[in-house]
Image (cartoon, rainbow, N blue to C red; front, side, top):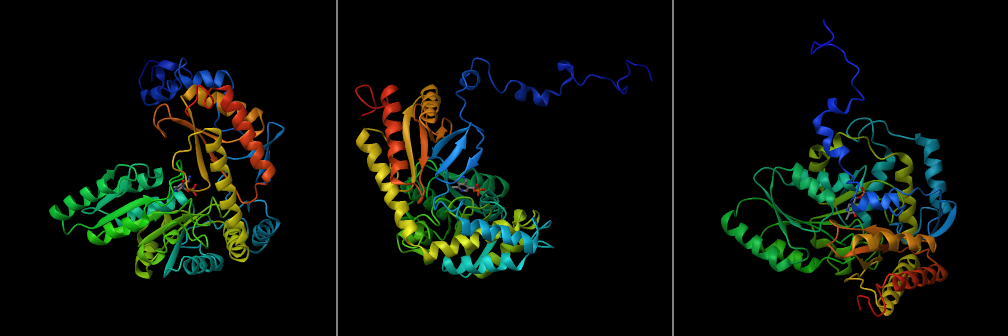
Length: 425
Ligand code: PMP
């Protein structure tokens, strides 16, 4: 073969002209004059920042101690010695990984114990585990709603519900965020035109950016009227709200009236994994038809043992939940008093609106310099001009931590004109 033949092996790996066009978007991803590139250049880019040590409410970043106000570690149990011991000792008994899916070699007695425990905790018939919260929602939606069915999904639902709707072959309608009149119009029309189609309403129980709680009683009533099933994603609700930490439906005393409730272990339960509770036959169906459950390796033993221990602590120490709510109320009140806009937050997730993207990145960086870590959230996750600091709290924040956070926000908020004479209030 000659060197110019199309089949000749050529050394063109580094030749830009020879790159597959598929990667063009990757090479052009960061517009050199765009907000992200400028932020990186000025060391204001707030993402992928490494944590060198983490004790829950405090962490070490770049050699400095920061107060952690950007974690979903709501009960503060990631650093609890009892939880760490449970995780470590499970590794001794079962090893570090399950090396197979639940369906085949990856079911431990520990998984069954956790499923039973969670079904009891959520006062449901049965429970199924998944290896992440993301896989849980994606896998439940995709298996429950199929071709010929309809899904009604809140526009602000988490990406994993959206992924489930995309994987399912069901027709999906997205209603305006928390606008249940809009949902009702859609359901009414669908009920008239397609009375026989299966219908699923899927919504976050607590919205992950705004910290609002969904109107569960009205959702239950709509589901009943229009013969739809209701699924709540309680990732930010279980172990967080409700008298015993049973999540959004339990805050209204309606735990029994929701068909499917999903949760995650990566937040209040200090681990990684997820679960769904519901009626036995529905859960048994998921065990056999939900792709991420069947085709992906099961939760590692340390993750399972962590959750079991966290459940013990949640049940034995209800004062943790009370502290979490006290902390959240204190912070919401504190931000409002300072003149910040915290939307309609009702939970330990408290968004603090700061304005455009550049202000957001600078605000984030200044807070870090004041020793406070939060999450910067910019469009498209939030509307333009409403970039925010997503702050979130844990039962183990001390009063001193909280005041340090408020002081830092006051200082930085005044500096950037977000509060005060030029501010939002
Ligand atoms: N649902 C919601 C509402 C979430 O916020 C998240 C995670 N941020 C998930 C599901 C996914 O959970 P996990 O991180 O455990 O996969």
